[in-house]
Image 1 (spheres, one colour):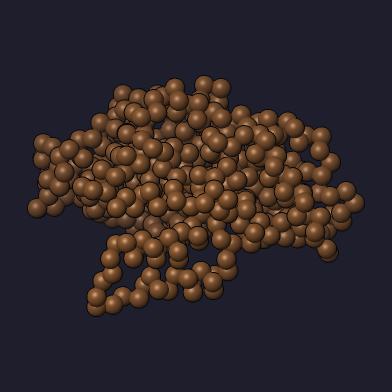
Image 2 (cartoon, helix red, strand yellow; image 1 turned 30 degrees about the vertical axis):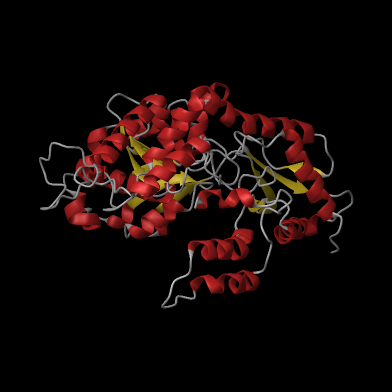
Length: 464
């Protein structure tokens, strides 16, 4: 039985998802976790899954899905995913799977070259962008400790004369995973300094220079994080000037490109990423717009030897001096999946020309829609998009300003309940806004305008 074909059996007019309440979803799914002494046939199990679970899953492959960074596997990725699932290879050590280990090593080298990183760069696969960002901040702190003459892996934050002086600096639009990283490292959220942004929601270079100059004698800045594609607006921080400032102060630069890095490959958008090769570390999530199975994230390092700071050696494997490659020395998990294979098979199946076109299409669509909406009195454009995210507010003629936040929330809630389309909600400059995330190459300007028409119709039903 081909279980991966189950999703193809849904009716064409099926909503993006059921729109059911949590109580209804729980009620439907309870029979699936009734663990009993005697099993059931695969046919009966498939029927149960199709009836009870599938309606409540989001159909990411539909052009009406315009809310988050998710995607059904591309056909080449699905092919690689089937092989990875069938053989269930661990990819931490040569002993576990020589083929999978070498395939990952070769893939990492090829990706470094694809993104024009230095010949001495390297990468490793991670479970998600959050873990990649956490590892990057750990490496930055480790590097900072070495500049002060001690091994952070052995002494930890106690090795610093005054750990309360340690801070990482980033934009106020940066991802919350940076707070997670500082929590886990025992520094706490108070160790994150957030910079105000300019009118395009990017780090303002002049402000950054002023902050660093002021903080230099008061705090020990161990890392600056630039974002290449912020979560709310998709804005790309100016990497090159940030890198130059970091070099001046001797600070580790990490670029969180979990969402945006892929668009480096599109020639018309490449200028946004100038200076990327100067970053000490970079996060990327191919499982977003590349359409490869989750988990599929990477951490790139400008200097491959920096991965040595992650190494944990053992007596039974990952021994010091082993001649074979052991990817498990580059990251904390001692067991992780063969994530490189679906990415490899997807790129090989599509080819770079088709892949780049697939990346270009949603960016061009958002660009076109933005221009079309510039003179629309019932839509407030909240930013000029760098990439494939568009944030708007529905502003019906004569509608009171003080109720606009509630209106956006109403439209979002109605969209969730109806299940016909999927959009998201965020806040920009303390305003509640509707957020469209376009990563699917099937989405055209007319598809996005249909969503605009839909949410405007919902807004007319709201009574304050």
